[in-house]
Length: 192
Ligand code: IMP
Image (cartoon, rainbow, N blue to C red):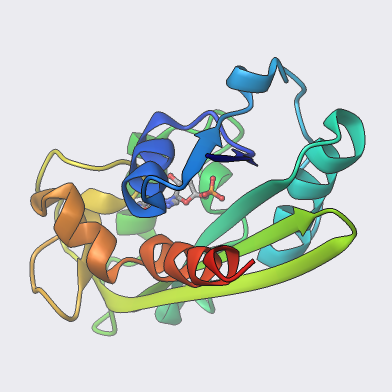
């Protein structure tokens, strides 16, 4: 079985990616390789941040690695929170506070169009690759559902009409930004 590091400790993301990886790959988390570094995410683009994380593991641990960075882009807010989605309401990575601020900032806006974008950077030997996935939808007026994480209770993908948090993990994976990017990653890795 081929081993590859996914530069995250987010249990939800690990479960999503492991479900898509199939049995040929063992996906190791940062915890699994003993990496407790606070990897800086200082780039101003999703691609930049994904590359920082994947290169960090490749350079310091000598392991093949991929990393993702995701943003929620809301049309009526000129693409905010975007690359700052994790800390929209401050530095605490608090999803409840992030959702409350987003709903507050969208009050009175008729246009609730938004999309999630995921960029995955792969560092494999000397090779670097980028994979992208996107899902379009709407920001709900109120939260709904208890599955998933982050902004899932207020994001309604166009394909389903119910929030990500109201969907089963498999159904979310099938259409989600990360699911789409991860499938491109594994199509590439399976050809290696
Ligand atoms: P990250 O770059 O993947 O850590 O994501 C940045 C922010 O977007 C975090 O606040 C996450 O909670 C949020 N986020 C990432 N992926 C998802 C998702 O699939 N659903 C809802 N929120 C997400």
